[in-house]
View 1 (cartoon, rainbow, N blue to C red):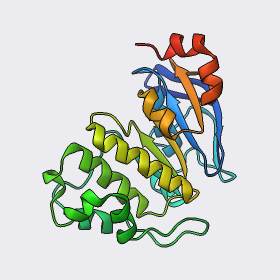
View 2 (spheres, rainbow, N blue to C red; view 1 turned 135 degrees about the vertical axis):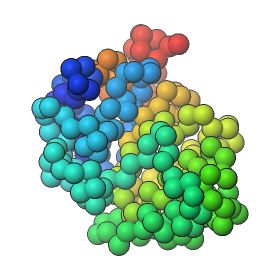
View 3 (cartoon, rainbow, N blue to C red; view 1 turned 120 degrees about the vertical axis):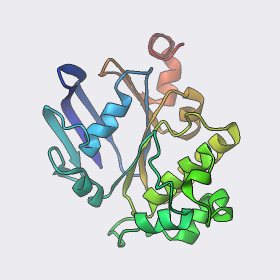
Length: 233
């Protein structure tokens, strides 16, 4: 579904991603692992064209998205959940969800408000509360729920377990497992290896913008030298 090929991305003169290549298959969950500053967020932003790669290609369902406006990339069926959430804080939960609604998309689940409330019961209870009245974990849920209302084929999640309570982390695990059942493809960036192990089919480790490992969790477990070199604190 998603193929990243030899991309090089920069912030000014800073070379952040170096010849990065990987493939995400339809319906799979891939976790992008690495320390702070490794290039995880830049990878997701490059896919969304919030950072435009200087070279290389990013193909989504056979179409090269490099240099397309981010809103066009979103309309192709890629949903993006940034780490900083970016909900509409003065709108209610219901209003945030309505803003995110898009028309049904061929090959994708058509999400309804009842469906996302079934995924996130906390939001159902607070449907009339403004975004700024929600906890950090609830704001994370709302960002994801609003993204689902766009009926994405693929979701990019940036640090979904960062800074939220353990009970909310468990709900995030359940959410990813359930949308996988709906054949929604997921690429997530994470530092929490335990979280990645709970949801991912495959993992990719990057360090200083370069791919150091791509494979299954079983393969990573057998490569303790890789895990210790790039994921140990």
